[in-house]
Image (cartoon, rainbow, N blue to C red; front, side):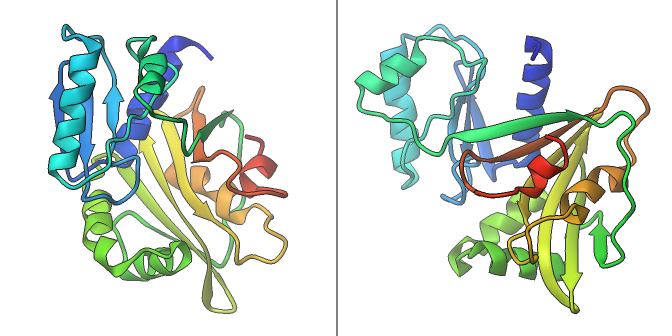
Length: 235
């Protein structure tokens, strides 16, 4: 994948799950969301800086610990500087929660909307209730979750699939400058895990522009075994 596209994907992924607070520190983007999700509570080395790496890591650790958060460094393929991974390992850090980001060109991709699928641009109570239940979100984290979802500046699509009038699958799609990102697609309550409506319908519902339109899927590597609907969709 070309570096320019990788950077676009990285920026879109950060925008799709914004923190409650953030700050730039010598080229690193520090994100805070009261401990809810690693993505929103991590240090992201975006650009090279001027400070010595050891000093910068120490300052970042202090900023997170002052907020009662475990220091977490999110390393993307274009991380700056490249030596950071080895330096963090020497400091006692280890790889955790590897993420698989898959891409699919949506040009010419089409599907029929599922009759039992519902879509919203604004956060609906029915979707939030289903998401909280399916993902086991603790009550203490509910305000942070609502804040994160409300802070998404790009176009959103909240998706809910019903089976026998009960929520069976849910997910979030975020559209930004021709990229359609799919996040937290939970299909575990669908018999056979599969078939397509929860994953295949989201891009069509967003109405992307003509031309080359990458669709993105983000999930924890190895999180789901078996015939993942994301893989069945062609990612």
